[in-house]
Length: 185
Ligand SMILES: [Fe+2]
Ligand SMILES: [Fe+2]
Image (cartoon, rainbow, N blue to C red; front, side, top):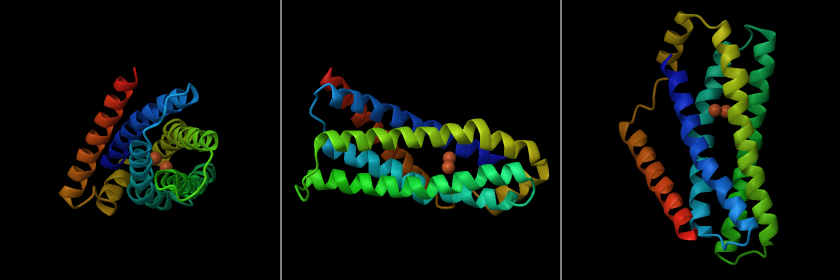
């Protein structure tokens, strides 16, 4: 079940970035001037990674199990709705941050921070929902043969550079966030 291991690892990685963003939200609310460029990069990364890489693989896995169990179908349908909603949320948030960066729009800082907080919360809730409810439910109905079939049907990203590039970008962003966090004290 390589796919489950990979999706879980991606949750762990995304969660680390979301925790960092959450600390940012707290600091903004306490009056620290935010580094909007960094914030924009992290939101783009989290949104981009989730929307174009992580969620589509999950959706394909959900389709594979469709029709097997009514309760599982209900859970995966909710996940797919989440994926759509999160996509909207991340692109809206990106637009607001870009607006601030380029002075293209008058965005109230308080509202932007609320928006960011909501994004972090919704992403976290979604990850937790999958980890606690959806993945265990899938695991309960799946056989060893299913996981083998799924690993063949939905292989790990075939371009090794994609994975490498992603992880390098991830490391760079995480480091930049950690340094920014230290500088702010
Ligand atoms: Fe998901
Ligand atoms: Fe997920």
